[in-house]
Length: 383
View 1 (cartoon, rainbow, N blue to C red):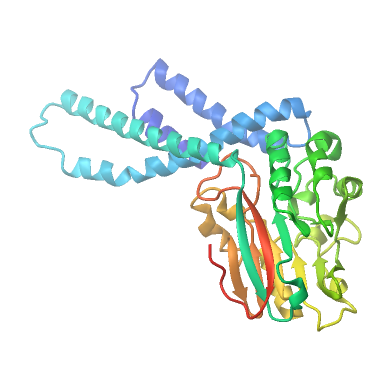
View 2 (view 1 turned 180 degrees about the vertical axis):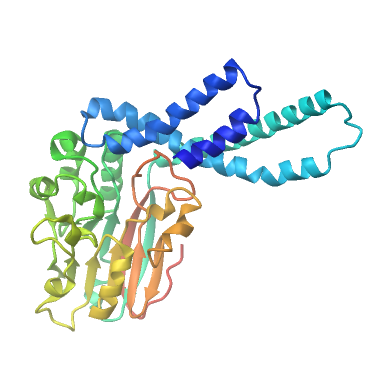
């Protein structure tokens, strides 16, 4: 925060104002703005939702805007260098040269501000828009033809919180139901608060309609809150929590195994019995029956590949959420979004339905994915 806001102050305050009252006031404003996102993080879960909501909205919105303002100002640096190198010699006189330089700095700052507000504003609109529906046919060699066309409707990263819920989450549930799912799979990071705070926001989950059930696996954010409370509450909404276990999904005499494991971070949570255990989930299964695995983080496909899992469904990445963070995601995860082949295991990473931190999405729309299973050799689905 200090480095980000220090750079913005240097270019947008110090570089465009003269010493005096205006600079002092803008310096104070910059300091306050730097403090707001920090307070939003530090006070999470420690203050009532009525206090957290406005703080989160202002603090995180500014953080997203500040990030794009940083990128926009950074992009002007070559222009600043060029202007200094090619300054016309006829600009004689120190006063006139200083005034011209100040005007140029203000013009560049204004341009950067317009670009940043435009990008961040578009991101806010997209993050709060209806999720796009992506239909992805996935072929599984061992799948019984009787299961052809079975639909697994999946979403992740709802991040119900002080800034996301209400009508937007109801709309998400309606979008899922409209796909007429055979199975609904929620692959983690559903909540960013305790049951008492988000009970009403989570209530639409009870309206999910599926022929063969609604299933959930934990994400890393479930371990930032009252994990036990949520794992007890979700079944009251008709959601089956898969913790290192599997269930059969049947159509007539044909079936496949739907397995779910805890998040990658669960073992470090300190909660007894929590931790991803794929061996336990697959213990005793018929190796001739296909298995679809629900695992929050794409990187867990390393275990899935070793265990002979046919398909893994994941979330966690938000599709990058704020470009260009999608490139940073690849430092920790094998994929940012969409389908990929990881050895003999297919992986699909959904871009998520909500957001974390800044209430905006740039380069990654909110998404609900319809996985349509088909028998046959794997091929890359068309987007």
